[in-house]
Amino acid sequence: MTIHPRCLALALSLGVAGAAHAESKTATLDVRARFNENCSVSAPALDFGELKRMSMNKTIILQGKLVVDCSERVVYRVGLDAGLHYDAATPENRRLAGPNGAYSLYTVLLPASGGGGSIWGDNGLGNTLSAGAPFLRTGNGVISEYAFTAVAFGVVAGNGNANGQFTDTLTMTLEY
Image 1 (cartoon, rainbow, N blue to C red):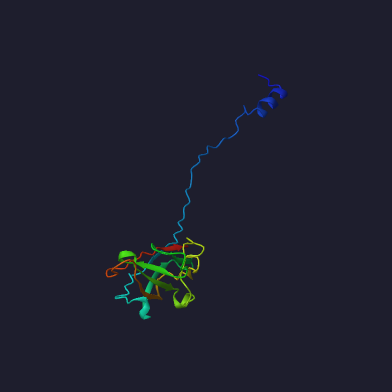
Image 2 (image 1 turned 90 degrees about the horizontal axis):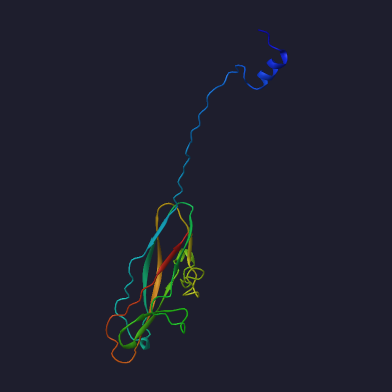
């Protein structure tokens, strides 16, 4: 049998002649990582004890404690809102509400290490007490405690007996 050179060249170019062919398979490689920055915030309740009438000029000053736990190098800020009984007529103070329309003005000041003496508010966070700035820090990976000051100014009587409990609730907002 004679193979014509043109036919042989054509057959080779089409892959008919025995070229070696290797098998191939593919698989996937999943790649994962986790990033877990977190923070928590708390503060024990404040109790001013027994209030006096505003006219007696008896302020009550107490120390509170802010507890923050944030991952290392996480920049955070803690805002403190105006409370449930805020009145815009006294923008730098909050109100403890009592019986028969009685109330007591009070203020909460930033921790000393974060602008102590300034009103602690939530400007830029909730803006309910924009007269005050939030507390700003960078986390260090361990629980940190910051002392702050709260001042009650006395009772303004409402329409009747003011004896009883005076309360308010503040919301802390932690942003990081």
